[in-house]
Length: 132
Picture 1 (tube, rainbow, N blue to C red):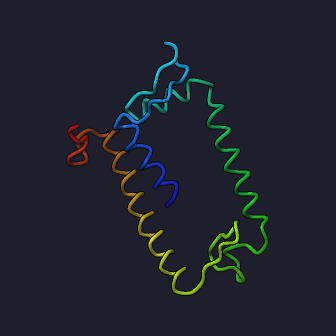
Picture 2 (picture 1 turned 180 degrees about the vertical axis):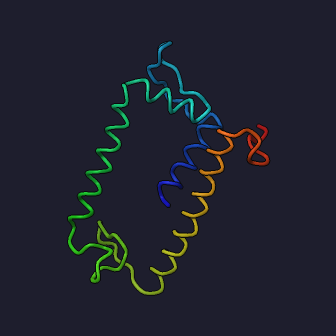
């Protein structure tokens, strides 16, 4: 869910001209394309995929750290909640937060899927791209 939330936010920011950080492209320093799939291809071509490899390795290290913190969060003794920093919540507060996170994650999954399909199949999503 959280990955879909970040992907949806990134797509919306990039599509609306938010990607203004200059990157070393073939034509010199320039911001990435406003179209997210073109920007992805530009990033991939910059360093032959080394940036994406760094992201994947960083995610792997984070996964290893969270898995080595003690009782696995999905085991019988776990509560389904990864508490890396020791902010433990319990009872009704935790249930409500988990439900909100689940609903927001599902909505973000629908959002990023619609952005992606609208880019691949023109006119498949009504109202996209929206007028600026």
